[in-house]
Image 1 (cartoon, helix red, strand yellow):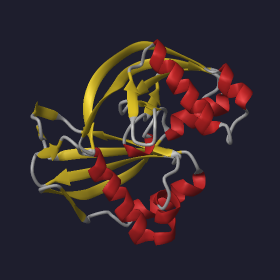
Image 2 (cartoon, one colour):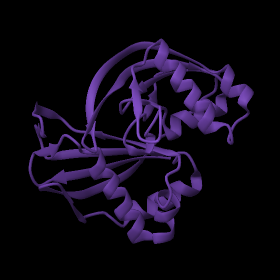
Image 3 (tube, rainbow, N blue to C red):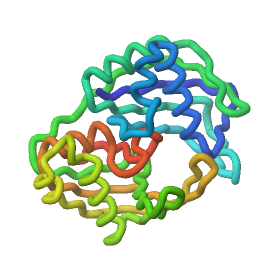
Image 4 (cartoon, rainbow, N blue to C red):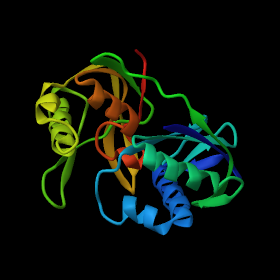
Length: 235
């Protein structure tokens, strides 16, 4: 399921490192709904089958803040499992008209609405990013390297997908998957105080329809449940 959550900010600004604030919002509403459900997602560090993106109309960027043209901001969230979608639906509905701190600002949940999902019927899909794709190569317990959406990065991305999804889908199907960049652009973002490169744009994925559906609903790349890798279908 996909949802749009509309917020109204007290001030027309948001911190650059804003994704962590929306993770706090998600943790908060799940905790208030059912602490066991919150623990299901966040008690251990594991892959979560959802992704989200944040939309706002920016006017000016600084090192610490983004100044906006309006007080409106939207959270788009996509959840793979129907069961998990029901948890999120109930948790989000309980947050309507409640206010949440976001650094030195405050945001109020105005409305929540479900979005129509698109159906994948072929083994080839052109995706457009809704939030940037992070490709993380873990070099050691304390060191990682983030790649661009290029030949080397795509090898790392595919390797990560095989490792992360091998319990959900046959390895044969994962290995046969191909990813082709069309119009991808590199940018630098800040997340939890750390700057690293990410990629946004349009790309094609060829592969098993069930795997393509999973990527569409749960995101692609590293940190998908932390505001990265949410995609929409162009064709």
